[in-house]
Length: 385
Image (cartoon, rainbow, N blue to C red; front, top):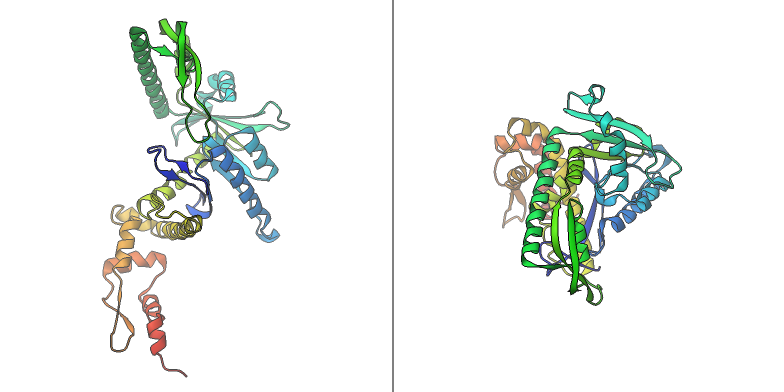
């Protein structure tokens, strides 16, 4: 399997792993490994094919409708067309840099924050409507615009910090007569009016595998610049807004609630990396990687089961009832082997805490003792009938 490079350390190889999680209980349904060099767009196409095959392979009596709730990296015309053709539903958050986002915000932003669109439970405003998502669409898609006060403050803070940092960078470039490429200048022209002149050339180095040779491009020197206040104000007026699309009619509140629950994927990967050792592969060959991935997948299912069944324990004591803490309690239940008879017996009685932690999972003392009696050493010592 082709390996890519980790973002935090280009010298480290990486592969990509995709998990499909059932939203209502955080249960992993399936997983797949991908080459580390693939981006989200390419992976999404394979995931859609896998889910379509999963859905088509079910008996008519147990058919169910799959709705994909995915990050912005999955959004493209090709992927959404594939979802529709596969009979899959979707709830997706659109990327801010998509033209359609600016279009719907410019057209509807004044309609969002009115009394009838306010939800007291979440403190958000939401507006839903239907229109074409792509120019060549033959059907309408449900759009949802939501506004959140806390998100507005976060977005505006990020915007002003970005503008301030860009202004500082341009000041230094002007003062030091720094030569810049057209692409570097264009990145800052979003919020600044920049006047410059061409001066010499620069060598642009290609990055990544198979990037090709370096090339020489014209360079420019800044003569003057100023903030484009209209552009900044326009961006500021759109802070706090999110634009989602769904394949089926629903309210903006329902779409946002479904999107907010996608953190079950983040929680699964957090558990895999922090508790189950998935932060490092520990193998090199492809067969070993797939074997270890299957072990991680089974471990993630057990993790999800323990987490869902012990929810009431966390209401009383959230810190002591985390899955790692519970597993530590379970691991203290041991059986010793009698060197004379070769049989295994439980070493200690269960503590009150262990009984409390095992009860939600449906595990009793009798079940533990039965499992110990079924160990190979015990089975061999039993008389034949």
